Image (cartoon, rainbow, N blue to C red; front, side, top):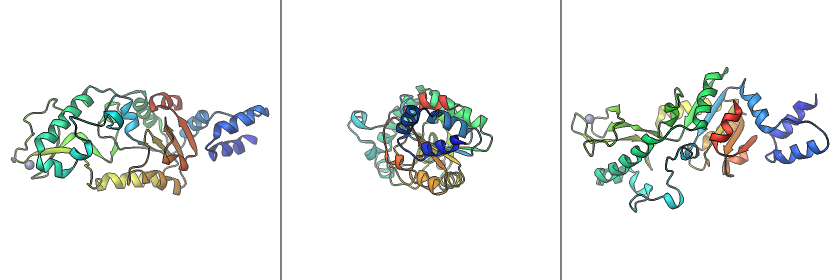
Length: 268
Ligand SMILES: [Zn+2]
């Protein structure tokens, strides 16, 4: 009956490698964190929460560091309702360029592993994403909760009508609604509220999750990042999959360091 106790040790230790080394040195067999997580995922109610990291692995630009500019504009200066109002043509040129990159991007093994996890999940699976590129759907995931909207969805600024549009490049520029209003990308801009329905679905799922996976997100952008805390307070076990340390680590029961495309397929 030693195994459950060792499992607990691993769960509550962020430095699980330390414990594994220690235990194996004194001759106790322990399963790896990957194996523990893989086994636990089989029966748990799961929420997978993804951020820019998993998209970056598919070459979708994240606008951090040296690649953070487009024609000398920062995204913070373009992705706002005020910028769109003052120059919809300029903002649409940027989104048209982004859409062309995203159109060419393919889901990576991390996206595909999440699709398979959803198909296998016996006790429930909710996929919540901060990404607006549609790669989860392209990989076959269903009912994705999209907290920041969808770049392939257009919404009329005059009558509010919404519709899908995957035209690359988009025409005319800027695109127009039959009512004559200018269409905008159906995504959440800086300073805008998250969509209420999606946020409710995300919080409901986080509060009833048994395992909450935070994948490719530094969990610093609120309110979305608050989901990790919410799940933890509701007693979910939290798995972090990220190449770098981040503030979300303090809530982790398990940390698997590395790109989603390498780590997630090992959990199937
Ligand atoms: Zn309209």
